[in-house]
Length: 233
Image 1 (cartoon, helix red, strand yellow):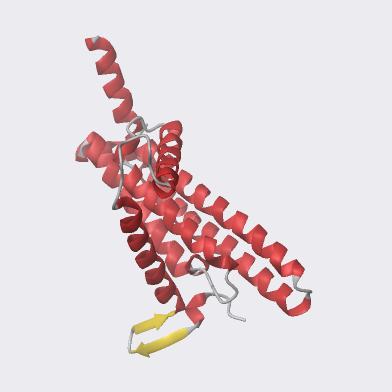
Image 2 (cartoon, rainbow, N blue to C red; image 1 turned 30 degrees about the vertical axis):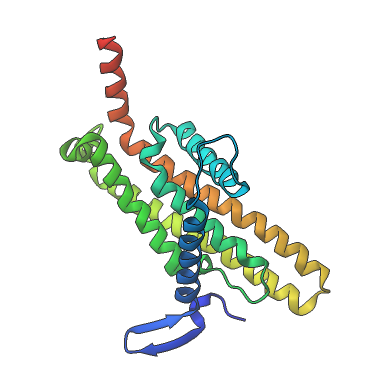
């Protein structure tokens, strides 16, 4: 029994290794790209739309509503990043119903890459919203003494994002593997269904936390814009 899909290696030469994590990650990305192309090729603006378009609109609307509820008034600006995070993690975890499948989110390398993407996205959106120097000033508020603590906070929450997702998915996979070896058939099936639910919850939590971090980075600029708008009206 492998702890992570990284342990299943297909090809290796020097520092280049192709393992199960890489294969499944690229397979899921390819599936999502092809699926998005097929679903969006015949979009309609009439009242008669396909079931696929209806499902797509429900997903996009749901993600936009969640982004707005967290505190970002213009969800269209962030939905590309946050929506992709949620859909990718959800898709990785949905396929655990297949008996041979090991989710790439059960690898620390995958969850670390996702966490680093969030780590880079926070200053990107913060600078985009507030400007470079205005954003940097947030690290020394309320006093300059807070600079190292704010930096440590950024790094620690990135680490927490990676380990939380990895730990939950990896432990769930291990429990299912153990039950398959010692229990009747129906118990692992129940655990698969519970794992499916847990995987979706983890995708939701990861994307919501990413949204919260981004909202915190742009909050001050949004407040200033609201005050200016109120004064002008």
